[in-house]
Image (cartoon, rainbow over all chains, first blue to last red; front, side, top):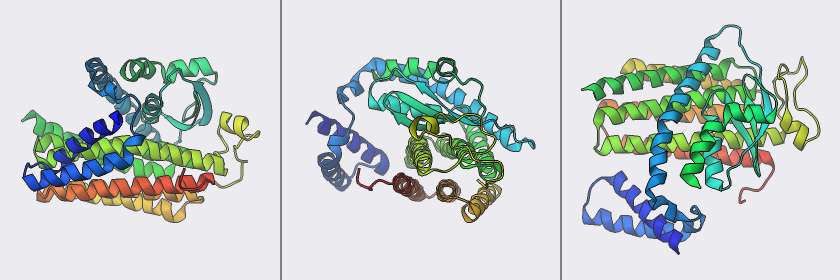
Amino acid sequence: MNRKIIFFLVALILWFLFTFNLNYDEIIVGIFVSLLSAFIFGGYFIEKPIKIFQIHRWFWLLVYIPIFAYKCIEANLDVALRVLHPGMPLKPGIIKIKTSLKTEIAKTFLANSITLTPGTMTCEIDGDTLYIHWIWIKEEEEEKAKKMIAQTFEKYLKRIFE
Amino acid sequence: MIFYYLGWISIIFGVIFNLLGALGLVKFPDLYNRMQASTKCVTIGTCGIMLGIFFIRGFNQMGIKALICALFILFTMPVAAHALSRGSLLFGTKLWHKSVIDKFGEDKKGYSQISKEDEAT
Amino acid sequence: MSILIITLSLAAFFSLYRALRGPSISDRAIAVDIMSILFCGITALMAFRYNLPYLLDLSITIAILAFIGTLALAKYLEGRHLDD
């Protein structure tokens, strides 16, 4: 029940951001639609949604965003250089690393961050093992590869989501 | 005023990254490399266009909609690429013949999925 | 502004080439996905040029449809049913 109420609030805020005016017919339709979607899809929402209202998690999210944006732009310049290079400098392969994150949403964010950063793409999540396609293999062992790819992200994501 | 120029720079870089991503989709040799180049470049390019519109228009109806669209693309494109690469690995699409290592095929299927020299990928 | 829209259309032609030529099913799927996101960008630029906010709704809808289509084809490739 707790989940459904918070889902309702999030959906209602999203509706008001979309329509962006406060006529009373818009308000009635918004409340009706968010109530309906909360009853249908509320069970699939994240576990323990009370974490949304804890302030320090939002602070670490604000710290995380500039680091992620810097890595992302670096990744794109790297891939753009590889596209424009005439000799196609590729040495691809699939490696695996282990993660120490527990909850589902933290693993999802870790996989998305890995996909958007330099030359790596998550192919499969199986329990706590991640299979990663790397465009230029530098290290084949698990521990060293983990230190190069996922160390910084894990440190912040653990503070945000757990 | 600075946000105006920042928005135009963001839009122009976004369009250039989109073009490079599509060029990588044509040029690279196998499915997984194509997916890397195109997913990264097109995601950050389209997000750049939307953020540029948000910087120029500010907090009105258009800017807020562009910001929501940027967040949506940023969350869903990596998920789609992940699901598609997992599906094609399980389906049996081969890797490029110059690939170095394939831990996924060794663990899940018992043999490595790297293709031979003269097979087309 | 017109130059930017023409450049994005050129990028869409590149991905259309991959969708027609591509050797496997997944190549075609990722090419169509990329082409949909490029159309989303074109729609946003046209909304910005003519100052029509409701065209951005259209671009969000294109993004959602591309995502759902790619997920459905990925599930089909895994050999599972669509409802799990």
